[in-house]
Amino acid sequence: MITEIVISWRLRELEKHERDGIWVTDLIRCPLKKEFEDKYPELYRASVFTPNTILGSLVHIGLENILSSELNAEIEVKAEKQIGEYKIIGRIDAIVGKVGIEIKTSRADIDIPYEHHVLQARIYNWLYDLEKTVLVYVTPDRFAEYYVEDRASEEEILKLVLEKKAPRYDWECRYCHFSVICPNKKRK
Image (tube, rainbow, N blue to C red; front, side, top):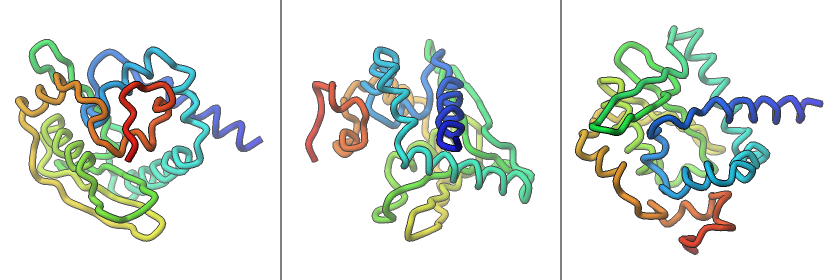
């Protein structure tokens, strides 16, 4: 019964993700992933069944509730900006004043903060006009914060929009539900 409730909840959360612009998360991952999500929604929805994504969602909810009650943080704040013909959309986990907070879960704590998460924080600093974004990592071995004060430029974001390198990072294929159908799959 609880399993059904959690999976139903995850499916509803997945459906909330509008597809009317370019999301910050699309800028920091393989550009083919968005195409595959639109073309093969059944594979996209299958991601809700993986324990790691469920665990990550539960950690997000728990920390967001704490941040809301203890720091009066705004939670799941959506913003958008236009760069030429492109609408860039983001939904940061929390904002307190001029500080963003982005919650990350990971299976390991080696090499954190990850390059793509730092890039995401830099884009959020631009999108929300923040002084900094705090990356909060929850791993089996560590609970840590990293501060990102740098801000992405519009030129850098436009380059990410137009870049079609797939995958963006060689390691992405190991965690991608679409690797079973992808012609660009890397083995690393």
